[in-house]
Amino acid sequence: LCLSRAGSGWFTVLHGPADVARAAERLALVLRNEGLLDLRLTAGGEAFAAPMRVLRPLTGAVVAAFTTRGAHAVPAGMFDLTVDTAPPLRLERVLILPGETTLIERRGYGRLLVEALNADNEPRRLPLSVRRAGHREELRYSTTGEPLVLGAAEYEIRIEAGDSLVSR
Image (cartoon, rainbow, N blue to C red; front, side, top):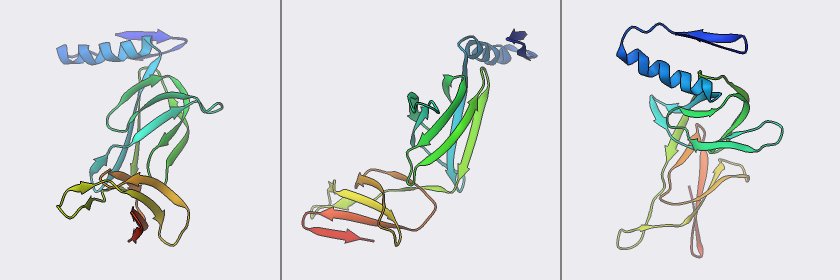
């Protein structure tokens, strides 16, 4: 099977029925002028899902938004990517080609889950602030019980519990 579009194309040899489905999926992407984007955040072989946005470089308009778990169809073109980690991961001018998969892997990420329990050992939602150790700038504001994806570093976590402030 050969498909040519605007002077470039691709060639696929089909060896069996399983190859037909894969070729049909790729053909559908090419005809829709889409490619697949697969961004993986890992640490020690474990993958972490984090929300991400695909943005137009000049305007910052959001083209697509999804989590980093698995490949997602996006329009072909050049885009900036922002991944909701602490600190945010920003990738500029990522090229997505029709019918192709763009795989981006970043290592050195981990998941942090801070839980607060009341006197009855029940979960409690409290405001939580993440800063780099020794810095005042807040990297992330969240609540306890909500997992956060962080780049490898030393952090200071502050939890606001009524009139008290707990820092670790």
